[in-house]
Each structure stands twice: as structure tokens, then as C-alpha cells.
Image (tube, rainbow, N blue to C red):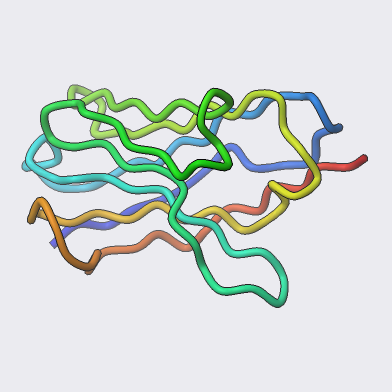
Length: 118
């Protein structure tokens, strides 16, 4: 069992940056695949990025080159550095965790709002 708490959301102008953090409970954080998802108003939740237990990162095409996912296993925290933000990045961002390399994510945070103004 793992509990996730996101922070770092806010209001930023287009072209600006934000760094989201997700703090996880538990002693086996380093074993988890950690993911970031987002849900914009009226849209389905979508995958943004994930990082494996070994540190391999994967991104959805729309954020490649702008977002960077990273993890600090000593702090039980995963980050999402978001640069060159666009209004279409506006959404609630969720952190998620799973133990398996593939499949669904059973553990989710409560979400943090990111709003990008034009």
C-alpha cells in the first residue's frame, strides 16, 4: 500500500515553468513505477509521463522536450518539471504508482491544479 500527495500546482503564464512533486509513503518507493497523468475539463484523464524503478522515462508526444520526470528515492518523491507551458497544458495533474512494469495504476494521489494563462 502506498499513499501519494501531489504539490506544486498553480497559475502560470504561457511559456512559464512549474515543478510538481509527489511524495509517497512506504518503504518500497524505489520499486514502484511512478506516473503522471492529467485531466482537463470535459476530457478524459490522459497519460503524461512515467519513470521506471530503474529511472527510464517515457512521455506522451505532446510534452516531449518540455516536461521532465525524475525521482529521488531517498526522499520518496517523484517530480514533473514542466517548461514552456501552454494553455492546453491546463489540467488537474495526478501522480500514480504501480509495482508491475505494465498494467494499470492502483494507487493515485488527489491531484493538483495547473492553470496556464494565455
